[in-house]
Amino acid sequence: MMSRAERGPVADWFRTVDPWLLGSFFALMVFGLVMALAASPAVAERLNLSTFHFVNRQAELLAPSAAVMIGVSFLTPRGVRRTALIVFAISLALVVAALMFGVEVKGSRRWIAGVQPSEFVKPAFVVLCAWAFAEGGRVGAPTLIGKLFALLLLPVTIVPLILEPDFGQTMLVSVVWAALFFMAGLHWFWVFGLGGAGVVGGFAAFKLSPHVHERVLRFLDPDSVGGVVDTFQVDTALQSILSGGWFGRGPGEGVYKRILPDAHTDFVFAVTGEEFGMIACLALIAFFCFIVVRGLWLALRNEDPFCRFAAAGLTLMFGVQSWINMAVNLRAIPAKGMTLPFISYGGSSLLALGLGMGFLIALTRKRPLAVLDAQAAAA
Image (cartoon, rainbow, N blue to C red; front, side, top):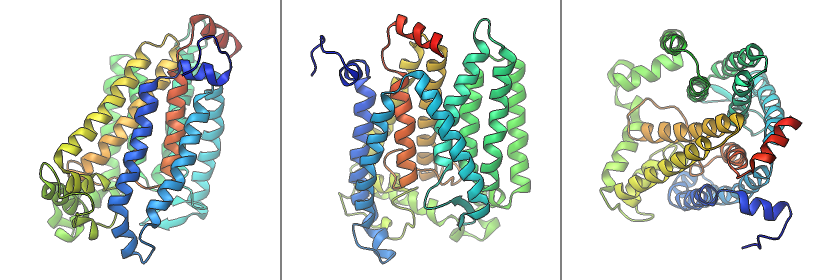
């Protein structure tokens, strides 16, 4: 604890940061390390790596991820906007570079120099969209320019993602953008128009993209694309959860993780179900729900439109990504290749989540109205 009379960046940060959000993210990081111990050794042995290869890598990456989150949380709203603009420009350029020079993995070019830049595009995109919508709705501002910038940001972002192809990230970005557009007060005409455009876009992707076509058919009718072999991962993940029952087999006692290829990344939730049981899965879902509700509540009470939109968008991005991962594990939707935030293994994912949640913490810090007015005038 720090004295209320003490002044300084650290003391001010400590008194203004939301402890529930900060503590929740650190708790997820610790649980992610526990799940790395449970899920990754079997995968490492199949790949002829040292038993704790992925565990050690997860532990090594958690420290810089936490450091990025804490460091970014010190930023002012103006600093958040500037940082997001720089990150977006660099990350989008790297996404384009990955299309031309990146390594192809499972039919997609998402990686360059060991980094998946699309992960860093997401939080920066949300902040920039929130900035554009807030400026478009500000009294006395050129509203058309702000809204036009927000409209142009979506195709500029998703076209390179579609070309990779990465339809999971495309869907996530589009959903958050639509939510921000709705919060900005669009007319119901645009609600139905955007909904119709989304349906048309999804149908076009199903018809024109072999990748999407195969995954949707694989989900709806496995026999149409080669039988049970094509749904091996999602079927095995569901069986893994069911085999754990209510209380699980016990830590380290899971058997399906030995045959599940992505047990430490996309299907870590299934390992949680098998080893710790359905009660643990429900508790984890409730924990994610708490973070989303807390983030949205903090966004709602924020007086600054930009902070309100950005905090809500970042919270939705976190919540929708979590939902997609768990829904895939439960075979409720087709496989998307989406990680479970702070729990799945993945260097780019962890660092990008640290950046995004650092933005969220920075934007939800308590700020007196006079400070907000001064910051708005400076911007």
